[in-house]
Length: 534
Image 1 (cartoon, rainbow, N blue to C red):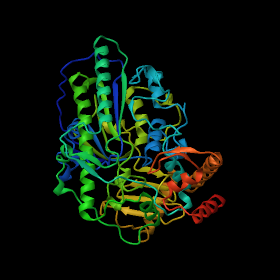
Image 2 (cartoon, one colour):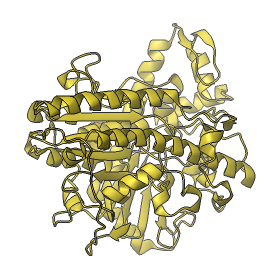
Image 3 (spheres, rainbow, N blue to C red):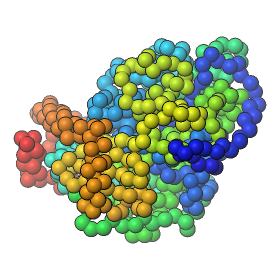
Image 4 (cartoon, one colour):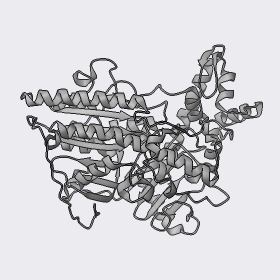
């Protein structure tokens, strides 16, 4: 595969040979495959020796299109990132603060423009998702609407800045099932089967001359932890080549120290335990690759390649024991850098793009691919269409990626700017971080104190994107109001609590908060009151 950045490109030829020709629709079909918890560096075609056999289908797909090497999520957590994608707006505009607070039900999104302006048929059986839940878009996990997720998640989202330094998460031990079964994460295989059936119906319809295009959204939950796989998928990983990440210097940044305490990994940080966990995650990615491969094969076998744009991406990454952590919720590349590969008619082939792009750029790009004017968008868009990068034409202007985080497992908000060789992260109330990713791709050495000029320049550039101190204050006001309302509503009442080890059909507020923060005491209750009054 060849590489391109701002200085031009070379293109590797790929022969497209559909076996059945469907009738070409008036607009192109679009397939968007969203994966959960996929580190953008975990691709065999990027050269990691442990991954040579892990992503063969994705690697072949990348050879057909454009792989974006520096694609970042605008929020490294599930619901907010998906809300950013569907609204085309950063969190500070669409207010997708946390897993419990995404877009409000009924908020117009990209789906509405595609169905209204482009006549697109969705995989919800009726245009606009009219059958079933009104907010549905396609097949699989949606998770962009407010109101979901656990009691633990919403409470820690609201109260994280109270700085309660107690364990909050409960992750089961990594495991490998001694089985050669391929369909281990069964729900995702069912989702892919539904997607394949949808594609067959649409290809048959278009072959009959019915010209409406389709938009297939397929969302997969693998490789999201828990870390579990089968012997079959683990065999795809070169376990001897799995790396053990370097350790962070002490003292650890206080925000990341808080995150380690909150996530509470309890299954070993010694090299052997870390390698095993990392290998299992890679095996989960291998299963994801197998899932996606079935859909890609279906598209090709149905003769849809010449009329269909296919986009493969993820909502956020996975730390996978880098910096002694799992999950996401921080600005390290393992959590914030996610895959993006696009192929279809008119797209360059066999190209790797170095420019910085974001999940919020998908909305305007999909409008361009569909031939729908951006003026038809449901709201003002923060993203920029990367169609010029797909086609190799002038027009791309942004030289940075922006991300932010406001939620569980962090005792303040985070605001990140990635540009050139630098990554700058601002933490309101705490010292910033500055990493030189060209010299330090593992993000181990914080250069903020030694590079005051760079910090000043990047902080000004970041503030030009987002007034992060104002946004932090707005977020905190929302957190305090939301927590007060929740606590007041729960006082004198009980709720069923079956999560994070609890099995209580009649849980009080005191039960919920004690299950949320393991080791809760009256001193911590006082700490919450001090935060509310601050």
